Length: 188
Image 1 (cartoon, rainbow, N blue to C red):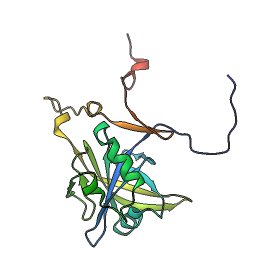
Image 2 (cartoon, rainbow, N blue to C red; image 1 turned 90 degrees about the vertical axis):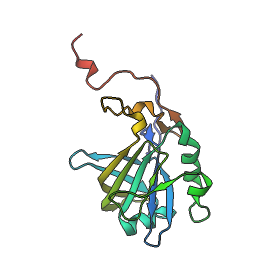
Image 3 (cartoon, helix red, strand yellow; image 1 turned 30 degrees about the vertical axis):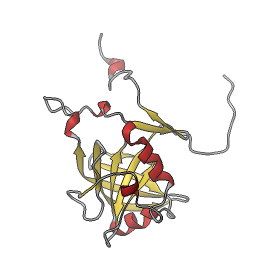
């Protein structure tokens, strides 16, 4: 195998393509699409998002110390892309993409996106100014799941919701299962 060496850059793909909703103290709300998001810790439940300071939602999140991560699906792919390239300074993303803001349970300013199968309410615990992006470390306050994906026994079938990922400039739908956690060591 012949490999080239490239300059340092981010090649950690695929990533979740999530829509992050935020609000300010005056009642304005916005949606920003973020691919730089991930899990930090299980207990307490924590995650992070990284946002450029010049983005419209950045000031809302920095001021209120809250945001909602809304998972995206095939049905939301167009809206996720559109909300990532348009600025909330210029357009009402909720109206243009026909998305429904829903009041959060634990947060005061940031709404949920009703059309998302999972909404994760977050309170910022720390902001790390790292360079082009600032990382918001946040503790999960509540998780909302669409009951359409609950089995009769109460199991949440998230993988049936049509989740998408982002890889090297492309949105991808997630495919077939290759195995479940621990399948490589299970006795046959």
